[in-house]
Image (cartoon, rainbow, N blue to C red; front, side):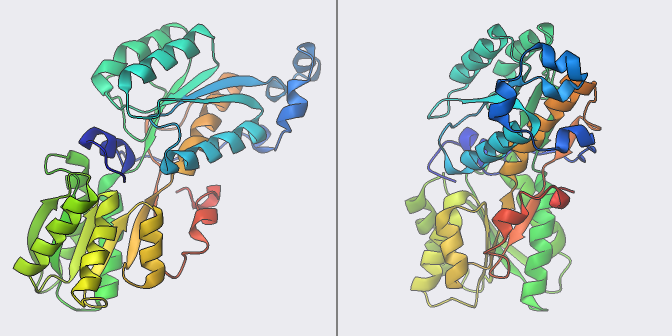
Length: 348
């Protein structure tokens, strides 16, 4: 996570989250289609072949951050889906979080009569009206990463916070190997509900261990310097802390810095969130135990797949609310996890 507001972190860290499962996809949409060739197919060819997949669709992905590293992973999934499923994909969005700009871009997609729209609920209340406009225009819409519960959408695809914390907690228990967990956690802001839900997922597991103690929940304010100062204060006040849960992108790197300075490497199990460069470096260095990654590639690919299936075959996602899943990354899979997360067989 970068230095951003609580709202931005709500969108990037996990950012809004609900459980579900992904439906099966018709075999016809799974066959790779050369996009360039499809563009040159005459309009009547779809009727001649009687194949709905022969007609190229137009899907617009309105991202909250057009060039942020986390969202560029979603872009990779979106672009691969465009090749595999034969649609023209427009990747649009602001360079900084701006819900009003996102709303304008959705309105442009509606005016262009796009076949489908994918976006994120940065400001759910403000975005409901434009979702209703899309519905009135007959355009299917998928919301990803953070939901718009009151808006008309065909499906939501995002990370489930409790599930993420649960998986992370189980990994920490295994790593501690019977040692009593003395826990400190850091979120971007104390009133950040999603971050709190993730911490609860961790503590639901860790609290079952003998000798468990939860020392403190601190906030980084999405700032690296603040996170470093907070972790320094934590280890000075609670020198027996041996588990450091970080639910803010910069917090794990900050924790690793303090742990190294205090000579605590190997004595504190540091858990991070997402796979930013500093976190991956910390894992390779052996200072950070692991990180819980969110599958942004899937958010780009499967959201597009659902739209194609609906427009071409009338098939809706099996569930309204769907968990996009998470993966624990440690030194054991540091070199393979990125490829693994693009494999639909891991999407369960």
